[in-house]
Image 1 (cartoon, rainbow, N blue to C red):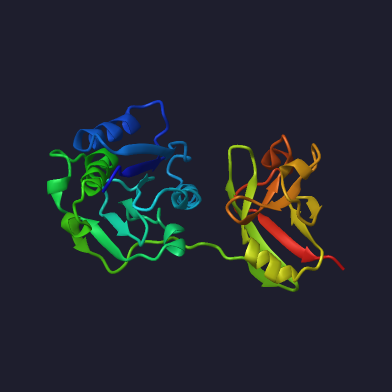
Image 2 (image 1 turned 180 degrees about the vertical axis):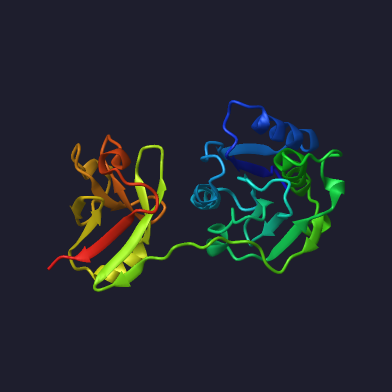
Length: 264
């Protein structure tokens, strides 16, 4: 690849040497690549948060980018390390569901179980596959090694269950699926589902003990201490608070109900 880009997304944080160690391994194999951090602040062990974060970032990168994603509570267990090849990107990480949202947006051309230790570090620990397997595989891939060289082709991979909004008694019922640093509450109701349900009729959004009338175009339309609903940058219905934290104000968390109802 020419000027390859490799991204890293983990729950490692920045206090410990884990991220730096992965970068060191990659650069030792391919010092010409470009390394980009998507984030290392995924809540520890939170697969769903990691998967959602990756899905909202991967497509902004150039075609051919290699994405490493490591949120891996089962490191050292029988779960497989994998490489997914799509028409535009490569994804490397544990086969534990971290790529659940990616494969809903990208067609998988090939899935490879990483079994060829020729492309691992000489000593593979049971607790740090990010450094010992995923980083060196990504570096070798960036140098032009073909995906099939890393192991054998798989017919399936792990995905976790993604809750879908439910239509019931004239209401669209979803839930809070992600909460970002600002306290914005992202639901599992995407814009297409919302507009198909409302059919251009006025509607209200209920969350916690609050009812919100209709949508706003952006945060700037909100008033202080007054939650608003809008379609966020990821395309999902979002509840936000201008210059504030909607999660703290509404006292809701991930999994809590978000209800959309047509105004009568």
